[in-house]
Image 1 (tube, rainbow, N blue to C red):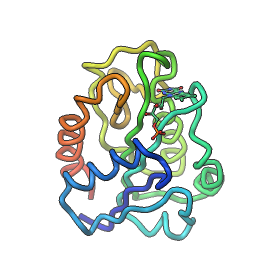
Image 2: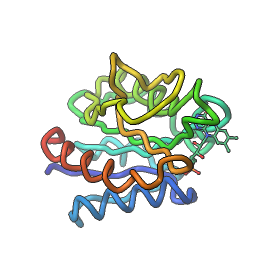
Image 3: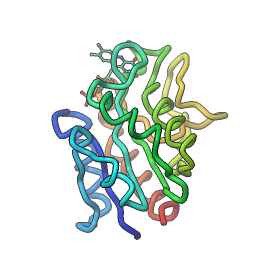
Length: 168
Ligand SMILES: Cc1cc2nc3c(=O)[nH]c(=O)nc-3n(C[C@H](O)[C@H](O)[C@H](O)COP(=O)(O)O)c2cc1C
């Protein structure tokens, strides 16, 4: 694979755990783990493939740690980049906004020219609405630690196998 990063906040607990599991399934030490709270403009564009960890907080909002970088992101030229987003959410307590953060981040990077990869089926989830929906798919990987933690491993493994073929 070309130069690849997994970008997430090192200060999270669950998102960090999923990022580490993704790396483990890739089994690829060439993938860099990058802290979303320290990422710079230059560093972000240095990767060809970017896997982003984006949970949803505050009833359908991006977590605060993205606040600083999102304005930068909205200025970047991401043409030619492949981006895959995984997001943590809670489909029972936040059924109306399930993994909205994935949809919001996806929209931002697509507007800047990136190609989103890693779409997954909504089968096996139960929710009312999500900004991450496109047709009958999520535009990334949905992880519901609170309610379906036992499915994490299988979902991550399937997603990584899919990304192996979809990333450059
Ligand atoms: C105050 C609060 C608001 C939340 N809002 C949403 C939401 O709108 N949509 C969603 O899918 N999950 C929501 N969640 C669930 C979190 O995304 C979920 O707990 C996730 O595992 C957090 O992962 P993190 O701690 O790594 O960021 C919310 C959780 C809390 C505590």
